[in-house]
Structures are given as structure tokens and as C-alpha cells.
Length: 440
Image 1: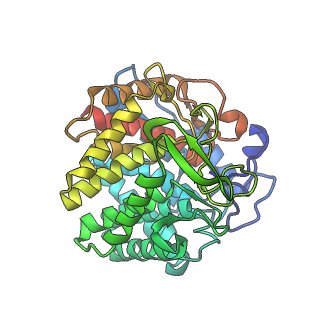
Image 2: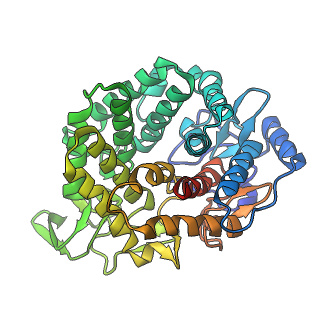
């Protein structure tokens, strides 16, 4: 995903604005705000639990949930602390940053059934998110809070969580409105041609999965299938253009009249599809397809863990909604393809490859909805558990947050994704929640 990184962790920990694919609602600054200072003081005086022994997956989830609350929840105002670039202390930052923690909280709520979690989620909606206003939450594309399709997608997914927690039907209607507006605004003429990432309309990207997941959640919840045709259109476009199933020839891929063919065939998904993107030598096809290797590594990838997990969830939901077994086959096939990709694992631990601020977003639903499908290998659950073990040993920084390097190291830290950020910590914590869901 497109980002503006701040050079050093020391500076990042103080800056209150200016990251994450564009802007927040305010200009930020170079000193810690009063709110950030208070949050830092609160965290410093909080007694954090010691890390439980390996294999204690429910206890891991309890600790991770309480860590997120201690670090990012404003108990005075009863909502998640305002953040910008993920750092606590900015008023009215981008709402998608909050959504990353909401996904982890939702996973924990589904794991435990604890009504206190439901209460906090409802408070976040009522006391913070809803006050932003319907227009900005369901449209206003190219500006906060829907700068690009990923911002809109994470928002729409979170609105469904808020609905379940609060019972406020506005959250439900906002979901439908935002999905409809994205399908109309981001479509390349038609949803059958996929969805553009942002206002430049030069490439398409797999965060469009988040919009599909929100649409499917809405349809399953309400029985209103008015979003189904467009959702299936986008799904079919992804299966045709983003599935790695070479040999595939990309017409006009290098220049008009100059095709190329890639041979990669691992049944995973490309991350981006270039149309006329500046700085790329590939056109009308996947970003990175002309490389000599299918590059997947920590902090750099032509695919993404969240895209592959997300497409399994999409397939599972389409199967549940329609009963069409082709979606079941795809969902299970994607899980198997991920398990068969050695580059996605450090031993048995998942590699956080493409986006430290998104790779864990679908993990809770992946554990609950994809790993429970018939035909899913036992290795999927085992590797999720191994990842949680490694995170709690190597990525939990007590009193600070959760690093993006799930096996240890600093690959993500060195490029600006740090545990002090709500998105970094929440995505890693959601992998822990997912493991606990999988271990049930």
C-alpha cells in the first residue's frame, strides 16, 4: 500500500500527523500533544501482565486484549484514543486506524462472548466514529476518511462490528451506503472491470476485498442481497486478473502491442494490478509479474497475506450466502495454496509480508470462517498457533505494543511500522486472537 514513512522511530513516536497514504484531519506537529503525553503516562503507570507460557492461546488473547486497551483506549472519553500515523495524540485522525483495533476487539468478543467488549465497541461508535457524520463516513472520496479504497473498506467492515455491538441501525445503513458508493465511484466503468485503488485511477489493488467482505457481512446479516451482483462482479474480476495461475499472457503489458507472459502458478493472489501507473514498467496486468521470482518477503511482497486470507473469507461467505460449491472450492483452495507456499513461513510462523498495518486484518474471520471449512488442512491451524507462540515471545514489547516482525528482527521497524502505532500493534494482536479462535 502507498505510504509516507517517517524516517526514525524516535521521531515517529513524537509526530502526531502525516502518514498512511496521505493525510489526517489535522496538520499534526513535532511535539507530543497533551493527550499523547497523558496516554504515555497512563501506559507507564499500568501494570502489564507477564507473557503466559507457550501454548496458552486463550491467555495470550486475554493479555493482548488488555494490552491494546491499556495502550490505546481512552477510559475518560470512552473511545479509542485519537491517532494520526497510528500514534496516540492527534484529534480526529483517520478512522481506518481505529478500525484495525476494532477488528482485534471483535475477534476477542467472538472468542469470549464478554459483554464488556461489546460495550466498549458500542462506545467507540457512539462517542467517536458516528460523530464524524454520515457524509464523511459513507463518501467524500479522495479525502478523509475515505482517501482510497482500503480506507473505505476497513471502515465498512468496522461499521458492521459497530452494528452488532450497538444495535444502531445507522451503522448498518452506513455500511450499505458506503459499499454502494465505492462500487459506483471506484469501478472501472463497471464493477465487472474491477475497482480502482484511489482517485488517480491508474491501478487496482486487493484492499477491494475489504469492501466485498463488508458487503457479504451486510447481506448475511440482513438478507438484503442487493449488493450481490456487484460483489460477484468484483470477485470474478479478481479470479480472472489477480489469481496467480500462469502461464498467463498480458496483452499490451510492456507497451502497446508488446505483450509478456509470466509462468508463476501458485494459486495465490497478486497485490496490485497496474493500468497506467507511474514508475512501473508493467501495464494492464499484475505488478511484479515481470520479475524473475515471485517475491514474498517480510516488508516487501508482490502478494499479501491479508489478500490471501481475505479471499478465503470472501469465498466462504459467498458459499454460505449462495450455496454454490465453486466458492467453497476457491476458499479451501486458497488456504491450501497458502500452506503450500514456503516463502510465506519462517519455519511454521507466518511472514508478515506486504503491509504491517493490514496483514492481520482478516485473521480472526479467517480462523472462524475459512479454517472451519471441509477440506482445510490441519497445518493451517497449527501454523496459526505457532505464529501466536512466536509473537508473544518475539514481538510483544511490554508497555509499548506489538511489533510487526512476528519471528523477531527489525525489518518493519526499520521502515517505519512500529509497535507504538495502533495499526501495527492491532494487526499483530489480531493474529494472536485468531490463534485463540482456532484453538477452541
